[in-house]
Length: 339
Image (cartoon, rainbow, N blue to C red; front, side, top):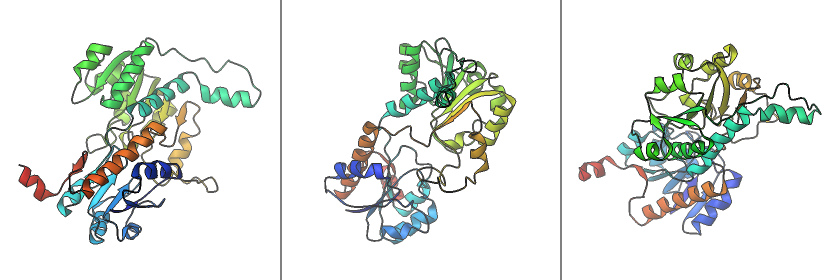
């Protein structure tokens, strides 16, 4: 098939080309998909997108009119895709639900360790030849209570890692996994109970109508004073303005983010020669107890290889007239037949 892949970063190209092995005619563009760029898919039967792309109903309609019939998302989350509109059009959509839970889980724990041992401040001091330790007193992870919000594959790996540190584990999920309880002593509790008991909270929930601003002023107020909050899930789960208020009051003691609710205009591009116009993000950068990374939790060789392989596998299945292994939207007519 002819395929246009949007938002392809330079580091992705070799992984996609290696996975493809000339099976499909790939056109790789670094431009994000949107209403003004959908025309770049002219002549393609399929497109591939990433998290910053706009796959809303109007954009999907433009793609359909261009002859696009397949959409391969190079990520787990599909919150940027109007799946209902895709089904109505007959556009097939697949994602990559499992690439490397270790990549994201390990990054979450990296943020925890860096914050609890003040590594950002320590590095800055050393580079300024300041070797004092007065403001670098940290705390042990051992014995701390950690709540994992969203205990899927990534959250399960986080539980395994933190069990090794000797943490007490709480889980919040609509589908409890008894194996995690048996192996690591993870105890499933309601969200508000987890917030009240946890010293550290790690967010791994998808973004949907139920989880948008799940962590807001009220929920932050219910947490322990000085709590550490880590989010490597989706930026919109956290109300960032509420987090800023909690940081200023001291209610939130540490904040580690790999995602940001208004990240699309910022992340994955070089803005070093521009003014930072996002005042909320700029304010986050002023706090010494905040550590931000630019949506890089997934960025390991293993994860990039798995993402590329799964994406090409979906394209190849469709090219052979078969359903992809990880379809999240199929045409309405097909659903009716299946029922």
